[in-house]
Amino acid sequence: MMILFVASLMALNTVFAQEMTESDPDEPAVALGKMSSLQSKVLNKTVPLSIHLPENYDNSKKTYPVLYMLGSDYRARFAMLASTLDYMGEGQIPEMILIGIDLPEGNSILLPTGENQDTTIPDNYIDFIETELIPHVDAKYRAAPFRALYGASNSGFFTVYTLLNKPLLFNSYLASSPSIMRIPTELQQKVKAGPLRTLAENRSLHIIYSDEEGELPNFVSEFSRVVADHKPESFTYKVDELVNQGHVPAIDFTMFLLALYPDFNPIENLDSLDKVIQHFEMLSKRYGYEILPPVSVLMDLGFDNIISKDLDVAEEIYQYSLEVYPEGKLLYVGMGVVRRNQGQLENAKLMFEKALEIDPDFSLAKRWLKRVEK
Image 1 (cartoon, one colour):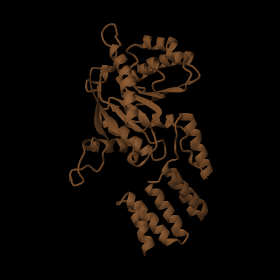
Image 2: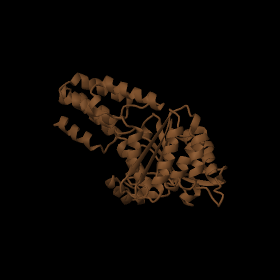
Image 3: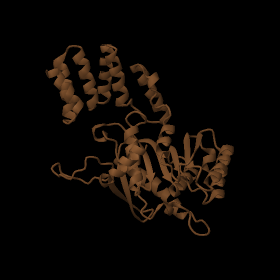
Image 4: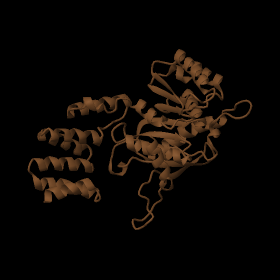
């Protein structure tokens, strides 16, 4: 996790890529996001957005779950989330779209204000997200009907507050070191008598914080007691108290994702194509959108059968895989290795060349092509 964090910091100057020509010598090697904006009638202002799409988004037709991040103007944090999604999206979780909501006024804009703890501003932000932002994202991107909201510190308060007011707005709510001490009594009352109480659809809240955050552990403990006494069966609630991790623990996001998709890739059980297909069909039903087997899972399964010399089985795996991912350059390499081991060198060459048509710089395909050309 620290490696990801350092890498993200090093890449801050290329986090947001602008449109460039291929001849531009300053084109960044890595781009973690693009800037956008949305004119909000609800908030009466332009809201800056930070967008990160999965690596193969443009070459696929599938839909992706969407993670909404509050406070993405904290660029180091946005870079770490984007990098983590890319890294874990190779086989530990589904690939996801990341939509960052910049808060240039600071995360405190999402807190109640004044002596009377007026919630007009956070209420307006919920309205903005529901009536303007989510429809905008759904119309512009191939968004699956599964959404998660991530907030930390003051925006973590807003995450919890949004759940208690609009539990159906997101499928999962992820709150890191949430400032629930701002209006603890009001939040508890919303648990007891708010819309969460009668929730019939599956929703979840995951809170992570550190043991050294002052009085926050006590407030979370009391909040958790109220939730336990009043939550519906359809609601999943999880709390992790970490030791000596500081405010907004750096490892929170990885923990959130692993808990959100706890059995996404049980490698030891996915030892046949039928089991792989059945497993991801089961996940699709659970999460409410189509979750395809990751390229890495299919590639590894195929290579396991190549190593064990079950070439007919490997061929079937890669044929299925290329039907699912017709632009899967790695899968063409896998099929090329199958053809090579079957003695079909010309067909193997065609597979490696196909991979290079998709990505002319794909070094793995280049190496295998040289082997069959010797």
